[in-house]
Image 1 (tube, one colour):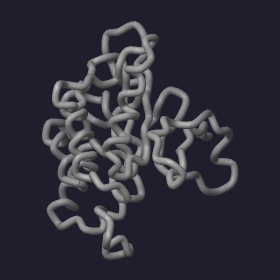
Image 2 (cartoon, rainbow, N blue to C red):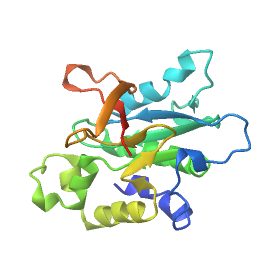
Image 3 (spheres, helix red, strand yellow):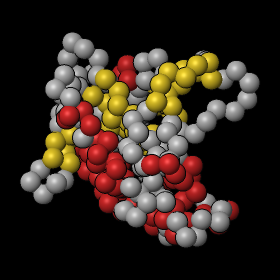
Image 4 (cartoon, rainbow, N blue to C red):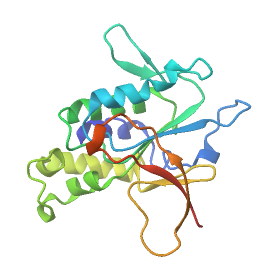
Length: 204
């Protein structure tokens, strides 16, 4: 969990807490929001998802790849939202966190956002969960403190307000909260074990 916190020291208190409407760029068009969720430590699949726009000439790339295969912020008009569950299940948790942290450092403030997933929440209180074989259940006190610092700095948030959609990890409970499914989020190709998340339009 330390890797995501590498960026929090560079953000003044509260600076990271914005909405899509508040991102100011001087550009005519509002930034498009690209949301990717449930990386779950599958760093290679996350790379593939981030490179998807590079395969479509009608879109500017979200990231650029260097000679060593590392991805970097491409500095185009996007907001990239990692919508929870960066860790667990996959074999490359630290590398997935390092990728997110690198993009956070390279992008202008507010252009890369991270919401808290239930697997990150497990790391806050692993003694209450039986995830001892997973990354989130093995964090030490310094990892936990780094995660808390990221939350307090606004680097990791509970939800992110887009233009017409509020992005939050996991489903909605209760009656009438979700009004309609808008469409699938980016599917990073996790196969039959992965359930794609969907962007939803919510009331309020």
